Image (cartoon, rainbow, N blue to C red; front, side, top):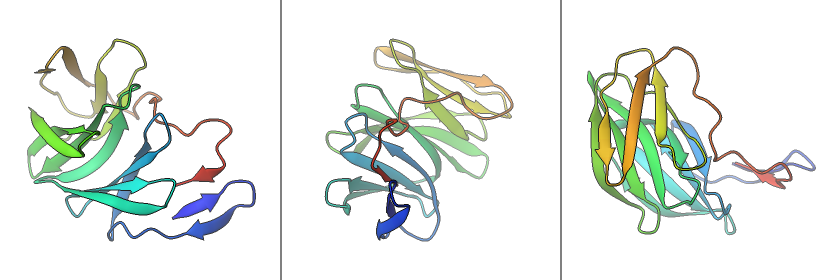
Length: 159
């Protein structure tokens, strides 16, 4: 669903499966990545309000965060007692090698700057390497810190 924030009215409805659970907007505002617990990630062109790509996953996806430069999206996922962080190349909307983690990867946030993506959940996690970036997963209760993919303060539409 897309809504005009000035009038709080629905502009259009965009079908993204039965169970959408999370959304992240690229820093330039051109794309929205919507997680669906049907093991799918939908990519929406925010200018046309249409789904431009569907990314199938082998895990149930939970939350997503996009890097400040917009080149990668990191999605937490789980299947039974297995969990992973799915890494998406946003230029091609394709999954590049996933990062296996120990159980229950829930929320994820990315700090602006040279630091790495952070996940927060209720279980002990493993750490992994993603090329030149170090992915740090930690044991913490509560929600993730503010991520860089929030809508800008003067947003005219919300997803």
